[in-house]
Image 1 (cartoon, rainbow, N blue to C red):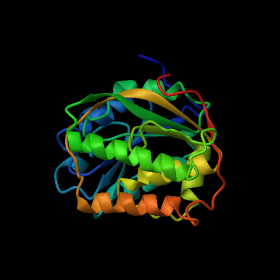
Image 2: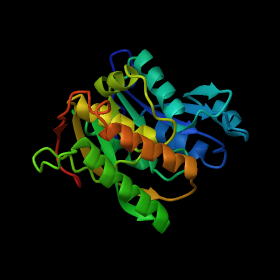
Image 3: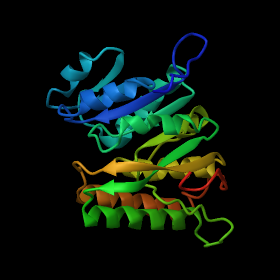
Length: 252
């Protein structure tokens, strides 16, 4: 097991932010597994089950409690704000339902010179065809939004824009926290990618495994994603600086 990278004050420079909504069955395994590699902040997003109680009993886990469900966007933004306030240099985000493997966290931490590390779901288990189709469709349209003129030398050509297993640098977190976000649910992943990309920061994709467990996908989530795509491809959505530095290639 790799050693945990530390700052001079003894606090690790990386925090794993885990949004959790009614994840009592899995949160202890996910948060405990992540704690082996970095500090952990669980955002209990208005759970009605024993999620908050279970997390409170875990040693060394910081907890942010929301009185009501704010969905992915609110939970991750608050987790990022905590990371910035505490001075963390890197913020890893991951799911609470064991769809992401905590043992893969060191692969992100090995990319400390990159501002946004995207987990490309190269190995998928039990993913329904409609979820796979939506993910690939979103990836296509977001790539098109980031490069609306289809220039081959300007296209980012990301392989997986909806994955929530990511690592953001402090610079990327600052960009995200400085903007009034429009996203409300899973479209947070699309919006933050676009913000980092258009801020000219470095981005890399690394392969990860993904095990489908449960989903909060519904018609509203799909509508939110379509609205986000419309915004990203609009003049106002493209107003920020374009042209990130793509660092490395997918599959590294």
